[in-house]
Length: 390
Length: 199
Image (cartoon, rainbow over all chains, first blue to last red; front, side, top):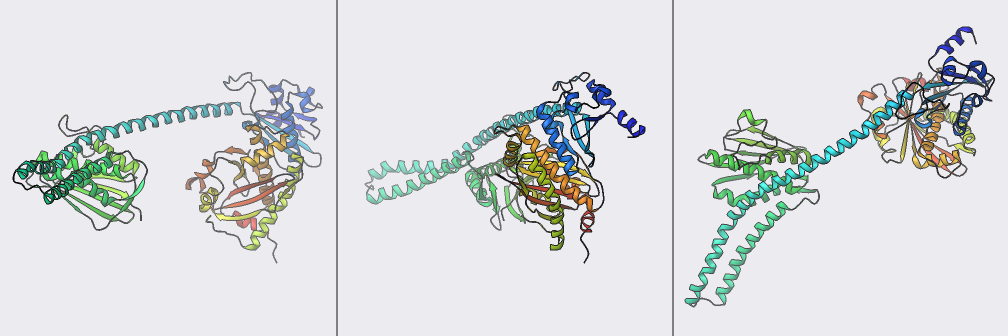
């Protein structure tokens, strides 16, 4: 080795030890002297594990790697992530929360196949390992924080969903009341007719059979209404493929009498049936929200004719559902805010401001679709786009 | 698995033979290490377009049981090598190496890294030798599967193809299967195949 070569080896900021196959030290650079405290003259001619403290298992790994390096003529490694260190060097200057011993990256480089000389390069990796540990710790904390925040968000979404359902429940009870008023009146008339029929001597087998059939029809119709509402409020069990047009028809059945009582025409047109995958009653909840909002807007503006036009449109891979009313539309300055939680334009006590927010959440997060609003010719136009099953 | 092979039968034979030569020596080192007879089976070698990487890799990864070890190298081949090994197989090797039944996580990682270094260095070293170039290797590191699975267009822009080398290490008592992926750039394949003896 020339003087220049030795000068370079001596000056580098990492440990360089050249040994033979028997581990006898041939070169011991300045970094090794400073780091281990072992003088060059004392080290040379000693075996590596006699000059410095090397644990038996690490010595075995070193010997194995030396063998591989020589035979395959390749560089082998002892990375700090798996081995920690080769030479046990207590940390002096660097304060470390994790390590007491310097973490080292070891490279075992075959120098000369004939003389079987090996160069061992030792890099201090304590700071890097320390940063990695810190990063792992931060990541772990971050993961925990993300988990907690996600749980909180899910909880609050669940609460909002419940709140939204409760708000809808008020509308629904009104709808049930409307839906039942007429059949209850009819049932009352049938019952009231019994005494006068008795007095007139009309009660015979024919009368009783007719009474049974007609009152049972009314009762069955009332029972169907209950089933519709129960399905609507039952918790989601699992995702399913369902027909959007049928979900719309189910929703319209629930609100039909209420709409009739307010003289609102609901026109529903479609060319073909479309199927999507998701929770059917959640989508029905969105439909009900939009219809209910349209009704409220129209009742407030009170135009001469009130209508809601609902259409479905095939868009290749998706289906678009349009809801248009003639309630006058949404002022431009608030259009961008109507999907925000707790944002309402209704009078105090009438709106919760969560219906449209939940609708957007259901459409975008649960059904992977989108919902937007624009102003049509007569009023607001909501469009829902959902991926359809083809 | 959808993949498009880019090698003719002759080229595939040549590449397989080239890698097989390097594996011969690697097997004897592994045998020495484990103090048992070891034989690396003739590898299956294929070159595929880089855009099929995720499809091919997904076939091997996915479960937490697969360890993924990455080794970066620089030569005429400039690239990344990945070695895939099941944790079960790495545990078997660690038990043999450390001669005990109860091996810990660090010992399993240790053998996975040593095995990767031997196989990738042997294989890439042999290929690089054909182009008379020197290869510099960085230390292998165990990485999460997502790091390979999430490589996007930006990270893969320097690569046009990848080589998949599949081999089986037969030990006296065990059979260990591993797959090596080598991402390679434009023109590298022709440099490698340039060594095919002309008729």
